[in-house]
Image 1: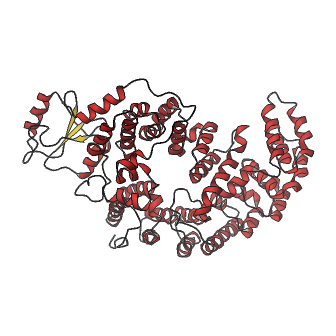
Image 2: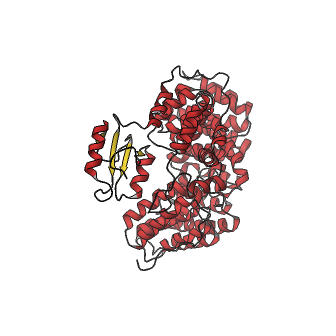
Image 3: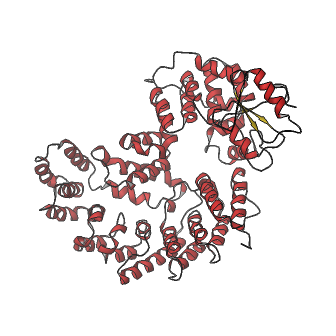
Length: 593
């Protein structure tokens, strides 16, 4: 590509560690290194979506990617990138692509998805849909619906799911006009008139989509729907009949309890059904799944200050009925997890994992924090290993007054993170070894984030200082380490009254002592980079053998030390130090200047 992707001169709105990665991606795309560039772009988005969307001027990169001269894969990713930057201009550009029949189908499909996507997920609060941008997007989506309805086929596979986010009445009316075609798009938004029209055409909806449509009609019409639901229950299969009667109780109340009791009386396992019916009686008029989805689909339209409370209510709604039965649709658990994350509530994370253990990775930080705060030592240790979060679990236990268990768990971590260092420092202090706390904070800090290709800065580097200043709550461990010893100690909290006892051994402290002692006997060492001018490989190898150390052939996890050669890629050094590997310094080994 002849022209280079545009990047703003001032990128102070994002953490410094993301800037070189962003420049690297743009250089690769400009050089037609498409596969590598797109791979790194995906990783950048996964790691940095919370920050990238804080810089709306980065939308220009997405618009550059959309240009017709770009390869189709780049253009598709341009649509994905632009989900972080909703605006009138972005919506118009995406609409032009989605509506242009001459554009590749895959590109139009992704453009339609980006027009409909109104979830906040991990985006920065600045990435918010306003009324003007929504109006442009909704008009385009309505046009797509009308075209597909006239053609009798939905060619854009992602369009129906995108339409689940749209509450605009004329869009919903257009979907209801052809429910056999648009059953997949019907979920949580409808007017009363649309719900009545949908019910009149209900048999046209595909079987795979009828449960969502039933919930939508019941939630929208309320008590008006109850007799319709009971009438439809006649002659249906047992599962559908029971769901119809439960929804009738939900919106019609006690007068419909007899019908469901008669149905439950024929079932061997009726207790859960009765319990659900009682829940509906205690929460009259609520179809919780629909109400939860009405928030989950539009979090990107909410003011940032309102999101936590709305997400908390939506999380409760999406989990309300799982105490009686599992959701038949797996995507509801994914949205439930996003609502838990949006609420920032560890207790709600625990409720989600109890109902759906497979969701634990989605709420890992909150879940481990809650287990630790409750003093569930064994559960924290097991969950931290399963979720690859030993550093997070260790910090949680250290904060919750279980220092020996924290140090034991910390010893299993394969990543030398700020959370791990904070856990060790705080746990040593709470275990009566403040001297070790001081040594950890002086000698065993985590690696700083790379901000350039020529050197790994010492901790705290520009990235960490930026986080501590601009987003101190994003990573409390980083902020504490930047601010110093007293801030680390301030992370401590009280142990729960019913907490499990701490580990009855001082062995975890001995491990910290050994690590800080930097002994070479039995240690593994990697020779990093090129040797021969400044550092002599043979001299170093002999010295390591004499000290009882063992060489390893690569930068493997759990390697104890590395020797920096004459030249070594800074990315390799960063990888080693993130794995907890420490550099051997001058004076510790013969041959190191």
